[in-house]
Image (spheres, rainbow, N blue to C red):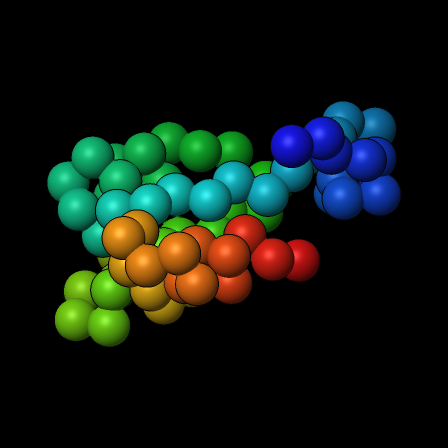
Length: 77
């Protein structure tokens, strides 16, 4: 997949882009989110039954990694 510059978010002349984290409510995903640059746009794919309380400041996309439609929706715009 190729990214064009208009998909990037500018912050102090540095391009930051959307980061999609699958399994963000799990142990590894939760700790990864905590260490990412807060200026980046972070979107987390979580299941309906997941506890997303530790993912403050992230955009949440509800779905499942095994469901193609939810992955498409999570990566859109």
